[in-house]
Image (cartoon, rainbow, N blue to C red; front, side, top):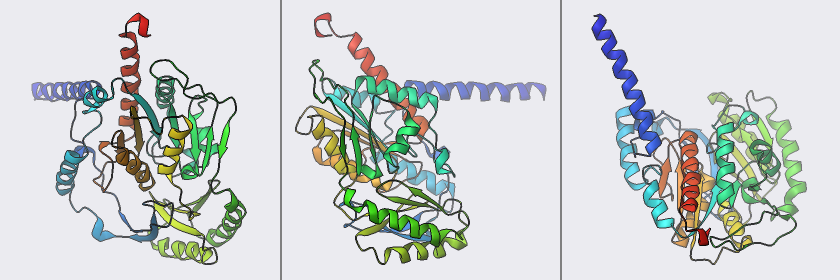
Length: 370
């Protein structure tokens, strides 16, 4: 009995070390062992909101959409991985294709750089993640495009060498960061910050809607409003399921007199934003244009995100014919992304490897090219 116990303990230690070694070396693996059963909320696509795939929201928890057993879920996810392979396992092949080209990095925040949490004000990124993003930004132009307000996401990230876009790209600040091409030439010569806000005219009405929502939802326990500048988030992660209908009804009643706004859905959140032809995909294109890279055939955009609103950016990269759209997901879902990562911990590993790859490639260049 004693020897059996020692054998089991030894086996677990060896298995843990072997798994860690695989992750460090970037071997592709199946993520299905870490899957979690999640509620899938039904949503209809609304082509008029954001000019992309932002859906009009219906807050109906669908028990029919649940996976009823982990075995089926595992099988579906493994099949999904064939179409959207792990970006860690595919890293060497991806970088081989990107060699000699200019990489530009775009990142979502919630669910990508930070975990999804019950309290949106506590969605902090780790110091390790911050260091990884900072290191990536040393080698590549890097932008964070979030649904949060630009000021809020900047407060979370706390880095001065990245670009920020809030409100799903409706609030963009391009700082005066010198951007160099692979041959050392400056790509931008800006000496001032550039602020771009395509939905600025809607700001007074957004403030009015926020005030009305605050009054309408104050009695619903767990409902939480967030002012994101040019859009409003109604978080319901802590709302009882039996109150979903009441919350949705009250939110929609506020919008009845505001026809130029639409209601979309994310991960346990409803979002109200102006119905304008602008989304994260447009923000990506704006950054590339500002950097002088929009018409360059040697540019490789990498976009990492986890939510529906990131699909617009995935579509833009797909339409360019080159680049790496990467979805962060632990469940199979419809997506335009070509690659996948399981969760923020894998995003961290990917960013660390990306910076390390660039650093190594620079150190291996002949002296006259450095």
